[in-house]
Length: 97
Image 1 (cartoon, helix red, strand yellow):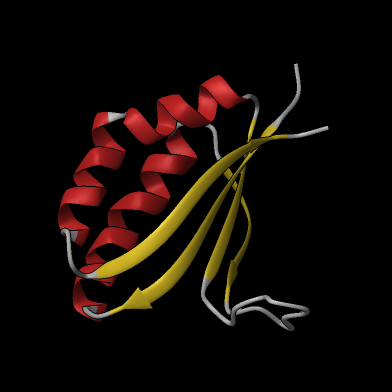
Image 2: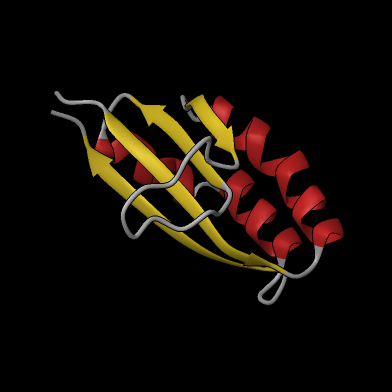
């Protein structure tokens, strides 16, 4: 079974306090669900049409594991702490090759 990668790109952050509350809950929730953080922060470089935005990359054992982590009660609690307007994000779960 191929590993899966959760990629989060932050288009905008309007409430850093809510983002901090989210991060405090999200990190442990995703790690407990089997995720391994591989990268997070601002890009070292952006090329072509890339956007200079905060990006997070997390590895999971499978797509099913990544989806289960997203849907877990612990991660849903983190999303609730973030709220609807604190950040605009693009989250993708991609199967590895």
